[in-house]
Figure 1 (cartoon, rainbow, N blue to C red):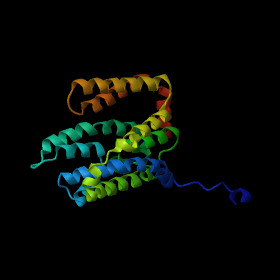
Figure 2 (cartoon, rainbow, N blue to C red; figure 1 turned 135 degrees about the vertical axis):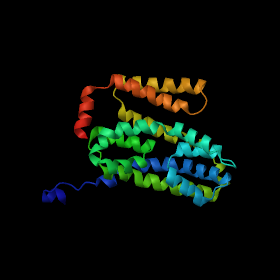
Figure 3 (cartoon, helix red, strand yellow; figure 1 turned 120 degrees about the horizontal axis):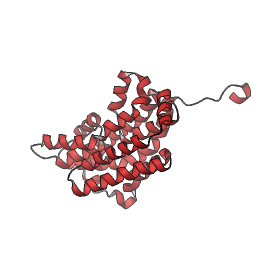
Figure 4 (cartoon, rainbow, N blue to C red; figure 1 turned 90 degrees about the horizontal axis):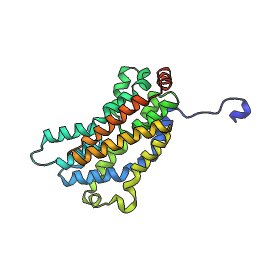
Length: 245
């Protein structure tokens, strides 16, 4: 009808577009969420406590680390340090989105970064490289992803041991997240420069994990990739990011 009347076809709002972009990742997230909830229940946390932990922390990697260390009394120092190492990559992710979100203003940026996660960063970065990254689109990514994590981890705790015994590898679900990120990397691919960044990041992470205990390999891989990316960056691309911001 819009074509007959000569009007432009209706487009989804940025918020709805964000929801559509994140939707496929929610499926891959469900089994991981349920397993975490089951593990937390085995450590003595109630479904309400698990849901609150997911709502406040909202960081799957560090939450798994925390549950792994959970004991009575709780070793807070070890948990905090380990969570910090696992999440140090968020500093680099938020820095990479800085230019693409500066138009949002300081207040909205702080809200956005409170909900930063690997998947949300990747989709936001991909969007920002091609077009305007709006606050509405970002929150369209965040809303279902956040609610899914909180509700599914609490549900996993409610069902308890049933999901502790779930082996994601049996159904190929263990490869769900790697497959998603491989697909996202393809979207970022720009030839030799991208290959150099990935090679440096992977090598640094593997070497560090081999010789250093703990989660330092995450930081090592991130820093190595960032340094190589800085040396191989195209100044014109940087200028374009400034213009889009």
